[in-house]
View 1: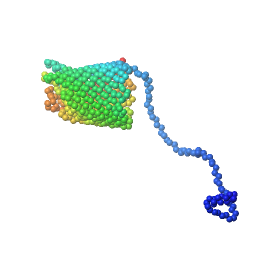
View 2: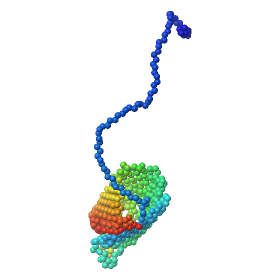
View 3: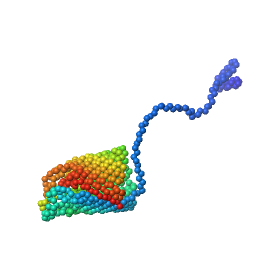
View 4: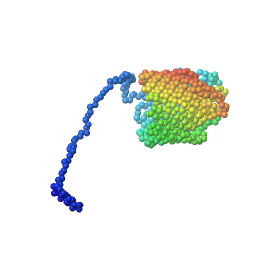
Length: 562
């Protein structure tokens, strides 16, 4: 081994070019190596479970007992479809010789078509003291037919309405008996008026399930309206509503074509002729996401009554739903052209003169805002404030009727003026289990006029209350109350009064309350009896100047389904 080392050293010296000399004996030694003996040990990743102990505090909670009452439920087993009676008759009789007769008849259930008929008659001898003859009679016949196609619904309707009223607005000293003793007898339209309305209507409505298609509804309505004074009117109205939805936006509009032809005989003046066609287009676009709705449009009208005029009205509406429809604030503006004709004027005031002058109205604007919503599942409300301006709004003034020096019942003339109206009001509704329904409303008004001295016959406030209570589908109770505030009326004008005459004298008409109570007992599902009380307060108030209403009308009768 040593020899090998010497040879290796010599070889290294030869390679490095160096020389080494060894003297003595060389004994190389190797020291022992202390090695660390580490052996791999298996290690389990699952930790051993530790013993856990739980300690409970000795505390006892005191929970008071509370018992909730659960409303009793009544199990009512019914067939899939209850028996449907096709006919219904109501007949009664009341004070002042007041008969009532009413008939409904309907085809019944059908998926393809339907038809029905309605007839109603009510008349009375009036019974109003200190005034002229106050008897009246109302008759109405209405029939319809509906057809249901795969994508459209068709409706046709024919109607006849006859109303007879008496011009009793004059003192009883000019009684009918005394008048008839004076030759010649007065003309019929001096003491009474009869209105006849014959008409028909037809409508078609689309039933598309796809909202992107052009939904449409169009109709035609015709009325031939006459009175005892030989005034004639033919009104033909076409209207259509179109809309289509694209995503969250809806595009649409309404179209109306209203033609009115009016002829009226006047005693000493030439025949009154007024013809005119009114055309209106109201396009709109709306957008919604379920919480808010914004709708913007305009009303564009051309009116050819008298002279042709052009009218433009802004139209907009917006609301936002808060807290799942609990509160819904809303604002809007509206405007449109309004047709005034013989039919509409006599429906508002049946004691108007036989040949009134006609002028259409313009709702220049109606700015409104409010808040509607629900206080609970049963209670809903709506409060709002609006400011509007109506140009050529019809107001009514009482004027004496003189025939050969004898005064007969006052008849009203229509005067037209610009009226600004502020309306602050609200409504409240309560409904519970379909057995109790209560509603009420309050409106406070303020008016500004342009030419007239007062806003004739318009109240400063109006309150209406109503309730219906159904006790176990056997006894039905109805209560209604109407409160109308103070109004300004004009004292009866002389027979020859016109717009150029002096201003009429103003009379304060006090407010009044009219209470109604109705009771109905259903002996069976088909047979029942009823009793109605009108004007329970027995107040002899005047809705129109010199025209008081009946005191306390009581009417009772029976109903029968067949």
